[in-house]
Length: 312
Image (cartoon, rainbow, N blue to C red; front, side):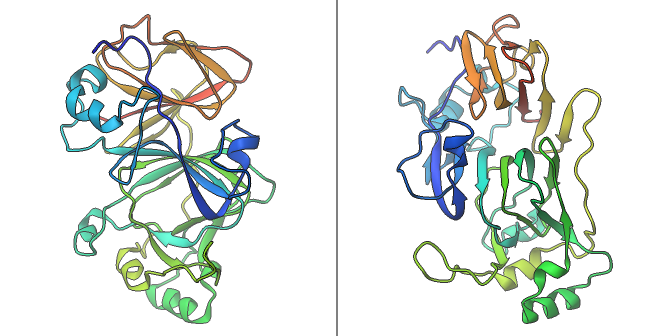
C-alpha cells in the first residue's frame, strides 16, 4: 500500500491512581470518560496488551512486520516488534519510587530492560523529580530507609522546569512527582519494580504490589545526583543506543529520506506532509517520503516538537 503522508495512531489512555485530566485540559485529548484519573497516553505502542492502531485500523505491529523498509527504512533493526514505546504522562500525585532492570539482570528477574527519557512539557511551581541517590548513600542505607519508611530522604531531588529533559537509564532509581506533564520515550518494555509507594492504595482500594527484592537487585548504588540534560547546539536532548531525540523549533526536514522518524509536538502547531499536528500529537513519518514531503513547518510562534529516531 502507498504511504504518502505521516501516520497517526489513536492514543491509548490508561487510568492511574496518580493521574489526572490535563491531557484533556492542556492538550485537548478526548478521554474515555468524564471522571477517571488518566495518567498515561500510550501514543506509539507495539505491545501485545496495548497496540497502536490508525483510524483505518492498521496496527503499528502490521507496519513493522509487513511494511518494514517502506515505513521505517532498511537500516531500522529487524527485531520482532517496534523497539520503542512513546507516552504522555500526567502526574497529579507522586508516582511510586521505582527502578527498571538493567539488561544484565532483566532475564533473571523475568522482566524486560527499560531505558527511558523524560521531556517536561509542563511543570507546576515546586514540582519534583526523584532520580538517583544522594551522595554517599549505600545499599545498607537504602535498606534501612526502606525499613523506616524514609526512602524519599535518600533519593536525589530535582526541581525541573518546563522544557527540561532527564535521562533515566535502566538501574536508576526514580519517581515522577506531582505537577508534571511529561513526554516519555523508552525501550519497548513495561517492566517496573516499585520499591516504595508512599503507603498509598490503588484505585481498587488495596495497597499496590511492591517489588523490593527485584528493586534491590536492579538499583545502581553508584548512581549519585544525576542532573537534567544539557541541550546540544543542534537540539539533541538524548542520544543513546536505543533512541536519538532532538528538540526542534525551526523549518526543516523530519529526518532524511529513507529513514522513518516520529514527531511529537510539545507546544504550538506544525505542518508536515500536508498534515497539521498540534501539541499532544504524535506522527510517524515514513521512510518512503521524499525530502519535500517530510518538511516540517511551525505554524504558530513558539512551536516545538521532538524528532525521535532509532539509531541505525
